[in-house]
Image (cartoon, rainbow, N blue to C red; front, side, top):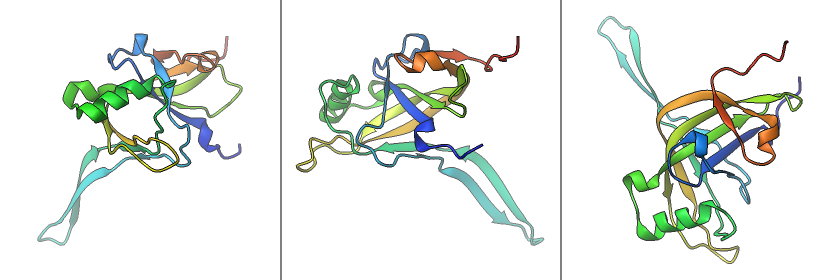
Length: 171
């Protein structure tokens, strides 16, 4: 198997900001972005005991993802909400939505591994240079992840997330 190209990993935000996966209005993130990664930000504490032993406490992860640039485009569903959060300096529940992560490991498969998670969307600035009005934002993961899958067919129009394991292709 060959290595996966970067486009094999897709991130979508629910532009309705309602927090319900079944009725989410997913929009893919990535136009104009050349590099974007989820920073896991592992949270560990290491101590050394009087016996010379090293002990590590694992507190999990505090994942974040930066989307930069995000050029203001009235045709994008995410733009009005991002504009309102930035210009209104909104906080808390007004910034919560869902993120859908999809990894396409086999382009011939009918279903692809996916996760849905509540996130906080926080613009980091607004303005920019002559390239366009930029509203770069950070996505902070918030709450439990739900494992599931999306159908390959749905990715062409509107991703449909289903909770649970990917159905076996064997009949």
